[in-house]
Length: 203
Image 1 (cartoon, rainbow, N blue to C red):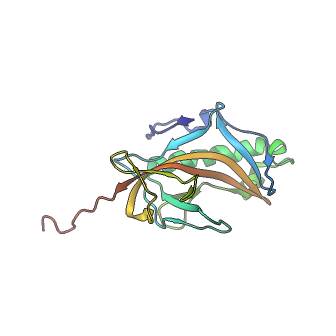
Image 2 (image 1 turned 120 degrees about the horizontal axis):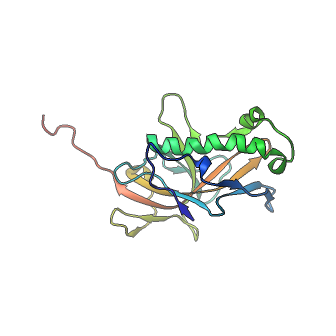
Image 3 (image 1 turned 135 degrees about the vertical axis):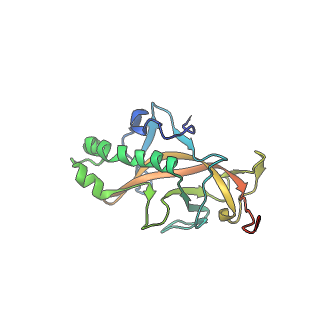
């Protein structure tokens, strides 16, 4: 896999990193997807840093038709990581339009793709933007969790109690009916004790 963790305001956009979608495949359950790669390698990125970790407003929870141990977690994005994932959204729409006959089996304009594409960055009103990811919280495929000493730890009951450094695999584009979007899966996550400073110090 490739790790793109050294992100700053001058980073090259994902459009220049050799992103490409494979031909669509259909699962036994009828779900259609296209695997993503960058120069033939999986796209994996460690979002955030110890100095600028991510947080989650809701923790890991079930979303729509999810069952079992597969959950959804929304991560608040600091500015540089907002720019990173927005660059993925910016790349996706024109790429899908250009390759629409191969991916959707019909010719589509940029406007038509934009209507059906669900961005990976979610922005609701004045709330901080978030990235929606999938996370396996139990079982043989459970996410690997690490503490601040780089040691393995059990999966927390509530991720809201920690500052987070997720290792995100942007694995494939999903297609359901006329909608499509990215699946971002957390493979590993470092859970740092949230730094709580007393607001009365110095008063």
